[in-house]
Length: 55
Image (cartoon, rainbow, N blue to C red; front, top):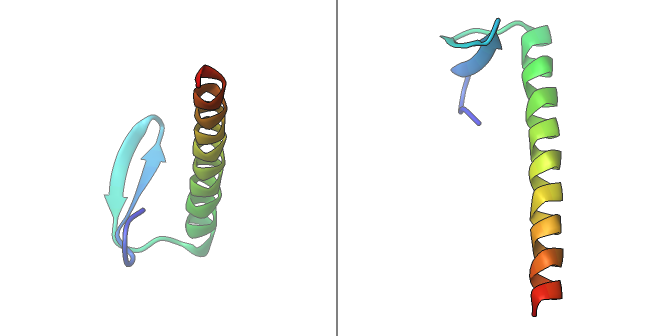
């Protein structure tokens, strides 16, 4: 995640950098980031379970 107001956002499949985002854009970015973290967590949990079964 970017620090400060410098954020990267997706615009029609392309990534753009802007310095100042609207409140709605910040919310959208955070919701997308939260979904990404939830998917990553699920992947980590699945990998842990697979490794435990292989032991």
